[in-house]
Length: 227
Image 1: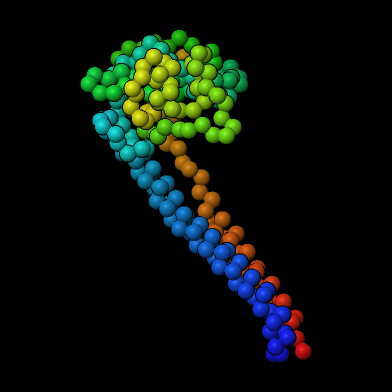
Image 2: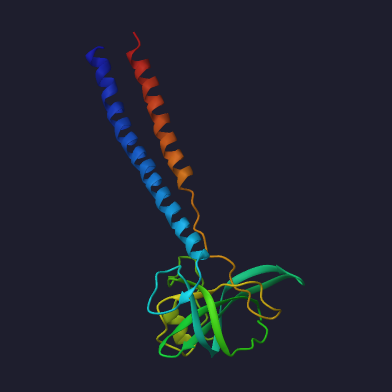
C-alpha cells in the first residue's frame, strides 16, 4: 500500500472508528437499560401479586398498600379519558378524593374513572387497596389545572390538596385498585402500570448501524487499495 493510498484512508478511518465507538456505546447502553427495565417490570409484577400492606410512613413507590379513613367532602377530577360503556362512548375522568386518616397525613386518592359529569358518590368510612405512585410534574403540552373548577391534569398532591382545601397531603398518590364496581361508582385500576420496554429494538438498531458502518468502510477501503 502506497503512502498516498494510506493518507486517503486515514481521515475516513478515524471518522469511522469514532462513529463506530459511539454506536457501540449506545447499543451497550441500551442493553444495560434492557436489563434494568426487565428487572423493574419483574418487581412490579411481584408487587402486584403480594397482598397489600397497611399504609404507614412513606413506602416505596408502586408498593401495594391498604389505607383506611374517610373521604373529605371536596373532590376533583383528573385528566380526560373516553371509554366504551353499556350506553355507548362516554367521556370521563378520574375521580380524586382526599382520604382523611386518624393520626396520619391525609392522602390524595385516585379513586378510578367516572363519567363527566360524575354521578353522586356515596361516601363514608373507606378502606382503599391500591398502589402508590410519585407526584407528577407538568409536561410541555400538559393543560393548566382549573383550580376553581377542581379539574386537574397533573397529579401533584401539594397543589391539588391546597385547591381542595386540605393542604399538607402525603407526598404521593394512592391509586385505588379493585374489581369492577357497582353501577355509579368509580371504576378503579385493575393492574399496576407497566412502562414500555423498547430497549431491545433500540440496541439492535445501534448495533446494526455499527455493523453497516463497518461494512461500508471495508468496501471503501477495498476500493481505495485496489491496484
